Image (cartoon, rainbow, N blue to C red; front, side, top):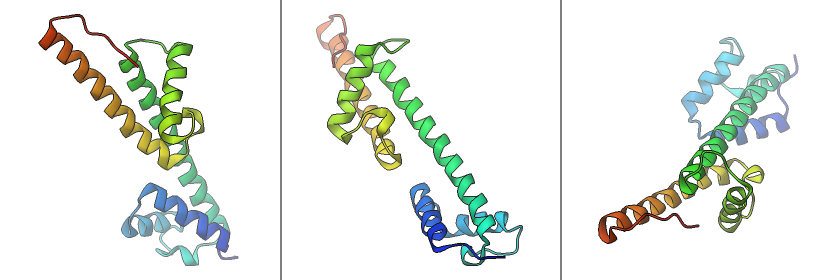
Length: 145
């Protein structure tokens, strides 16, 4: 049984860092994938590490999908629509490109996490503007880009 490679180890630790996993969670994860034999990734086999990396990549992809869906739902709130039109997509991507230098479908993990926060702030700003318009001017609320 060959031990995990340096490349696997580096990638594994990069995935853990992205997930902000602490040492105790890492030990538990390693124990799960070695069937309790080890708690340190240093003594994992190539096959065990490969399976663990695939698991973490799957979780990462699910997390990316969830964050993108959250951004889309918040954008729908901002634009006050049920379905995104091309103009809405263009406006969303202009916003993301200005802040993060990439469209929604191009954003990697960490910038995507930050984009969720940024679009939440955008929504909060638009909601405050609309509320102020209703309360202070008695006028119809308008949503702007």
